[in-house]
Amino acid sequence: MDLLPEELLADILRRLPPRPLAVCRSVSKGLRAAIVDRGILAALAHRIPRSLRGIFVNYVDQESPCFFSRIEHAAPRIDGELSTLGPARPIRPWREVVHHCNGLLLSLEDWRTLYVYNPATRRWVQLPPRPKGFDSAEHLVFDPTVSLHYEVISFAEAPRKPKIPIQPGIKRESCYQGCSEYTISEIKKLPATLRAKYDSEAEREGSVEWPPSSYAAQVFSSRNGQWEERAYIREGDVSAALIDVWSDPWGLELTYEVSRCNAVCWRGAFYLHCRGGFVMRLSLLEHKYQVIKTPRLDNIFTRPRLDVDEFLREYEDDMDKEACLIQLEREQELLDNMKPSTHLGKSEHGIYYTALLCHQLQVWVLHEVSESRPILEWELKHKADLRPSFLQHYMREDRENIETTWELDCGEQGSNDQVDYGWDSSDDSVINVKGEEGVDIGDGHFDIRDGMDFLGYHPRKEIAFFGNRFDGFAYYLGSSKLQYLGSFNPARCRDRQETRESFIYTACMDDLLPDERNTTHGVSTCCLFSSTLTHGMH
Image 1 (cartoon, rainbow, N blue to C red):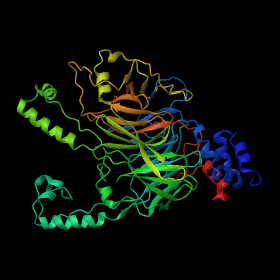
Image 2: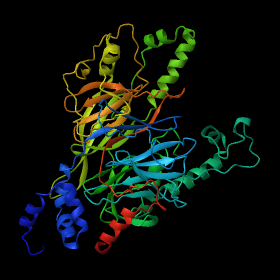
Image 3: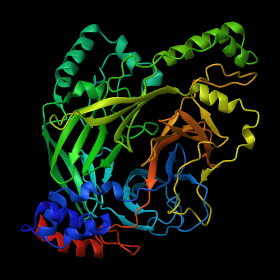
Image 4: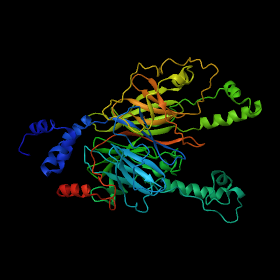
């Protein structure tokens, strides 16, 4: 093949469909070099179908996720609750979606067992236990334009901020006796010399560069069916420090209510949103990574103000005016100190970085400065305040009669993968964000403290999905229109009705997961066969 002119070879290969072209890489070294090294498959990646099937949502205090999708009635059904995942058990296990990547899900069961699952084909594989010392979030890497194999990556956690050890002889309140660490309020009351020593130690350790020039990770590969340690080498000088990670508004501690970091595949690279204000861009063909600083969010949002008269009307039956004003002051302080939530995703133009504060939205897109300067920079693409549109929606007298187009799960028949999941913007449920500041809310009430849940981006269109009190909306970045889709409030939700994480799902019928419902240590017959085919190419 090296004898053929490059332009002629590229023209021949481009006439093949993308997926068969991807499989051809396993035939010989020559084909692999022609397809991968010359970038032909990457150039055709936009032709690989990425039809939106729906959104997987994890909920607080619920034993399984749900699937929010367009109402259609055709096979195959997507297993939205992961009910067919894993071996049969007498008691239904607790499960959540950890990550989604190009049609495959990474699922966690009972806090200890990881599965890779294809909800469209219902094939799955159980991963062996994770190595100790790498307990941070796991991320699934699957890009059919690079390989039909998948990997699961878990990076070593950043060192923790030093803690002040419990001091003998210093009395603690009874409510803190069971705590192994000092609380923030207790630290403020400790002797000044002890606090100064702690601050000095934290400042010294916090100046350490992070992420390191060689970043250790544990990687499970479907090629060999086992975890192995791998080092990713940093390219470039851009880096953060541990103090940036420690000061991240979401904190280093991963609690039940705090969302995981986002990660997406795009054109042969894996983008991981890390705490500390940076994104790691990993090469899928080389064990290297770049550090990309995220946009600065200082003073880019207008702090929402609670209306005194509206607040008094809301609580006048529960407390007197003086108590109501005290409560108003407390809640306004919470709003003033609220940190924006941030999300990494992908859509029509590549990698999108999104920041939300209450109902305010700002969106950046990652792009190269120029062909001569291949430096990645963020460009502000869109900003809006969606509160007027939500006001208009919730104050409509006919709101209960709006025809919904999406629902949780799809019944026994499911959705049709051939359907184009766009929307008619002339629908009655579409609201124009622009020019709605004067909406008359009448006697209704819309609480700005509720905020929005960011659910993700449409993979092929500039449409963002939001949740507001379990109501789902599609927001068109190009026209600033908001469309009501339906409710994703599960009947099983308990008192704490909150969403935890959401994952845009695009179906994939091509993978190397086993057809059988059981495997040995995560290695399937088809994985071993494919690994044998490609053994000579690495």
